[in-house]
Image 1 (cartoon, protein in one colour):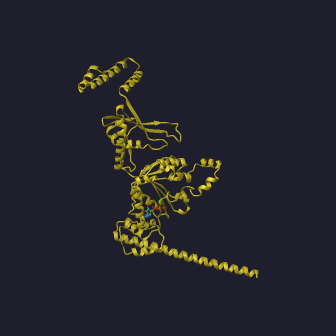
Image 2 (cartoon, protein in one colour):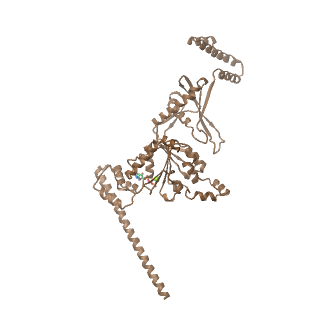
Image 3 (cartoon, protein in one colour):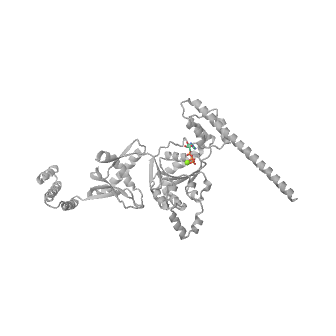
Length: 485
Ligand SMILES: Nc1ncnc2c1ncn2[C@@H]1O[C@H](COP(=O)(O)OP(=O)(O)OP(=O)(O)O)[C@@H](O)[C@H]1O
Ligand SMILES: [Mg+2]
């Protein structure tokens, strides 16, 4: 199959250097031996033998990069490799997987299973492979599929690959991710302790958020300060995270503010549905799998769980059977949640914001929202004149109008949410801007006056009812007095 003299000649011709010719000669002898012996001997035995000789002559190193780095935590190096190879794979691989991105208008190409490609770096040749190991007998704590990448390279390039190449992959993947980054919205479900994600394309901005300007600026400054405080947090020995409690009646912009925060900071959102989390272990698993630059949101925290109540007295009262009962119930507890917010587990990740929202701030356990846990308490309230002007700009594209003063006066006496005002102002017609704005503002005046009239009517009815009850009471007392006289 191979002619030794031809191979040696070719090798020697390429390099005049003696060392190289020796190497060429060894390789040629090796190949010739392999071709000759394999004709006569048992092929599997020969293959094993030659694999050993090959490994001795040309030692290789293999590094496995699994998708998880223990405890169901995503291996960030695996994610970096995935991004890095995505850029290389489409050009080099023969077998690829195409995956539509969440927006649906683009797709990503990924190495197919058992497929390999070769990459070069500083003289080293690195062979990448992508594999999946399946375990049909896996249980809840073990995944049925384990995905991993392997990289093979010559032993002599060990320092180069481990020292520089892996770093190069991480850096390149960061560059690629920020170039193609789409903000993501993650959510959890009852079936698995895993996040599912969709592209987050909410248009909310602080500019379009209707609220008091000073308060808005205070929040923007706080967020900016947080984002730039990596070194400060390290210096004071605190985990780089911040908590915000948003409270106020329904429709005052709590969820809209979260979207505005995410867009402002360019962070992903993890919308944690606590009622879908089985127990504290699941909660920990989910939260350790949140990335950096993330906003972790628990909406309507008062409704999510029985998180109210005095932890201390509960602790004291707890007997062993109570604890077994707890285990059986498999619930997330207040202390489980607190432990993640600022206990030891809070250190498993940085540059994270935690946001709670509630309509009933008074119902929450003070431990949950004390300063330090929820660093900033933000009240979102009924529509003020200032907030109305932002909504008029958003929806009607106007900064002033003769009806503004009247609306301002009505809003002083009226509790109406920004959502309700927005509902009146929204109008998507082909009419001219001016007539459309006037019509919508007149409608708003009518709504505010109607509600005002209704309130006055309700107040009069209530007064009449109280007076009537008073009259009935005095009549009955008079009758009773007369009876005993
Ligand atoms: N402050 C606001 N600025 C701009 N738009 C607002 C504001 N408040 C409410 N809206 C409008 O009303 C809709 C509902 O608001 P949002 O969902 O943010 O209220 P919420 O406070 O989260 O209510 P809930 O307590 O019911 O969850 C939004 O889609 C938005 O269009
Ligand atoms: Mg909401």
